[in-house]
Length: 387
Image (cartoon, rainbow, N blue to C red; front, side):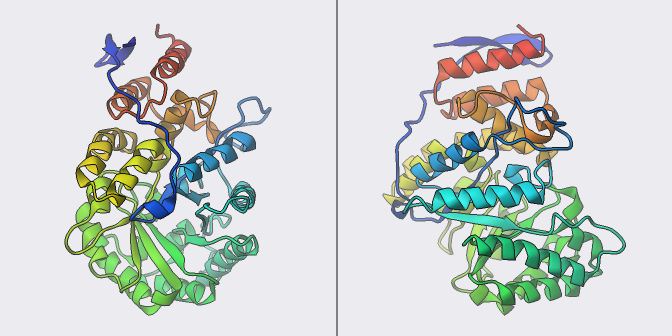
């Protein structure tokens, strides 16, 4: 077994790897008892001559190859979402290009499940932004996605959170938009822990009261809604909402802290999945879903339970910086040959944080090639002057 010296509690300590990598095996989504999307990250181009804080540079070949990897594992792709650094380095022009390219790749396969984020992020919040302006912004992005043949994930709007004066404004916007969409959408309720600008979404800072407004929108437009993705990092709130959804409307868990038990479900129902962590732990997620399809709940939990401490670490507060951990794990696994992110976001987590991520990834068995992972970790340590 490989041993590597890693930062730990302000010192350098040896760590010996023990994890046996989970087998990378092609699977088909039809074998899964749940609908499963992985929100996919983008791969930066480290050789581009750009200003990272201002202009994204994307390695399109690696970015699209990663989508094919998810499809090969039977997972769907949730495209141009917050995991792709939407609003944190990836603007609407780049997101639109990403959506176009990803949908073109999906069209070359018979097994590619994909849905794409549409929001209002090309509209800067401000005193001149009205509810009608926000509606038009949503319409513009939805039209762009639907023109490419894409399904919609209706993203939360920072502009709406800033402009709304109460629940009625949310109801007005969502009712107007949902009446127009061509196919049923997934609504995304992204909590303020992921994006502080979304605090008070649905017109109330109290999540239970906000949930009431959201459910009102869903009940009034149930035929236009495939499901709702809830990202509040609270299994209790997700379950409470899940039990109130109209028949036929799915709950997509966005809870990167409690996904295993929420997907497994209880006697009153279960959650499907739309998760950023499934980008990072795709082989484990795929194997676990196949096990659940075989009604092997014990194997399902044996595969996913060890990934939960890793996910909780990646998504620890400030949660919005979780993308750094997702991309770092992709680098450790050789899915990109550098640890560079658009917007320079590789700098948002400390070396100590990355070292603990390495240890937890080993314990979760999601380091595909331990020797390569050690080599890549040593490179990152060296950049920081730690040997």
